[in-house]
Image 1 (cartoon, rainbow, N blue to C red):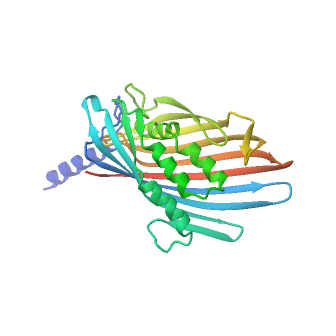
Image 2: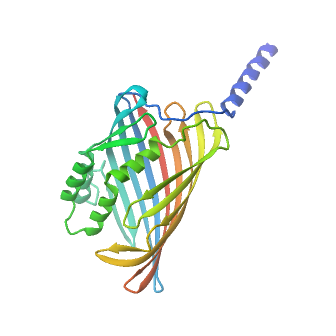
Length: 303
């Protein structure tokens, strides 16, 4: 009996050690199933501190979204057609003693019809992506229809929201976002300690250059742990706000960790901390804006 017990304990310990053991080299790539839907739940906690010589105030925001990505078709050599659709959006923001909140799952959200109109417009206009064998986006269908519908849904005099949407809802922005999800890995074998760069240009009201470094921290049988560090810097020393050019300087850092599901190549769990500092001069008034953002993403699969 003792020998059997010792044998079972030995097998258990070996299995436990193997589950944490480092393997390598491995080759990471996205491997999705035709007909499957992959659901990404993202939460963002954002603290914005605005300071000037006279005063300072803080805004706290929490944003939650659910994005579903269905593999409509899969061809030889793993090229795919993906249909993406947001199924939930929630926003809660508080500043100067006032709170505004909206949750698309709650019909009684205080923000009312304006937010709901925007959400349903986004939900009713899925965007289709076509990828090549490595997961890189090669075609985007439906983005212009979504932009047109959204601009019709928002208040026409809200130029700031319009400008933000123009920079977010375009092919370059979608291509950047989904390439960072589907085409994240280098085309080579990886082992613990290996690292690679990802560089991109973020087109927004204030254009940014983003350089990210991914490092393989740990390789397990079912997952890979990646560490992430990044730097952001504004590429222009001025920006237009409501038709007026103002001096601006922006820089920031990123740190995070992603758990990659080796069977799909997708981020199954991840966190990203971003610190963004903006110095701006509006009408002769200098302001410092500090954004501290913590993002958490989880993926679940519906076959």
